[in-house]
Picture 1 (spheres, protein in one colour):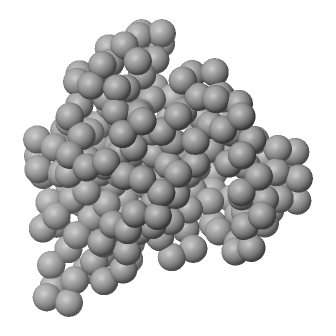
Picture 2: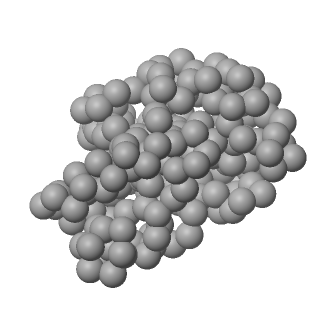
Length: 205
Ligand SMILES: [Zn+2]
C-alpha cells in the first residue's frame, strides 16, 4: 500500500492518498479529504479501477476537491449523515465565513461507527469521533488513524464551527482509554502517534 500526503487549499489541509494493488494487477485508491483540485493527485489516480473519497467531516477546507474526483473518476463519496448538510448546503460548511463558496456536493454513502469499507485485500474501519463537528469520523487502516481535525500534534481542533464540547470530551476520553498505539494522520500539520499525544498533549493527558 502506498501513502502520499498533499497539503492543499487555503488552509493547507492534508489530503491523503492510499493506493493498493489488487491480485489481478489492477489498482484501487482511497482519497481522504480532497481539499483542492490537484494535477499530481489526479495523475496517480489514472490507473485506478476504483476511487473512493472518504471525508472525515464536512468543513469547506476538506472538501473543495471532491467534485473533481467525482467528475474525473466517478468516485464514491463517504461521509457521516450528521455532516451531510455541510456538503449539500454550502452555507453550513463555514466556507462563506472565509470567503469561499463551495459547490454543492452530493455524497453517495453514509458511514457510521464500526462500518467496514473494503479496500483491496484489507478493510477500513469507521470510528465516530464527534466534537470538532457533529458528524466527525476517523478512518482506521491497519495502525493508521486518519482523524481529520480531531487531534493535531500537541493540540486539538475547534468545537465552535458546528461541533460540540461535550462530544469532544467524550471522544478524547475514549482515545485516552485506547490500548493500541496508532499513527495519527491529522487534517493539518505533521503526523504523530497516539502514545506520544497521551504523554505530551494536554488535552489527552
Ligand atoms: Zn474542520
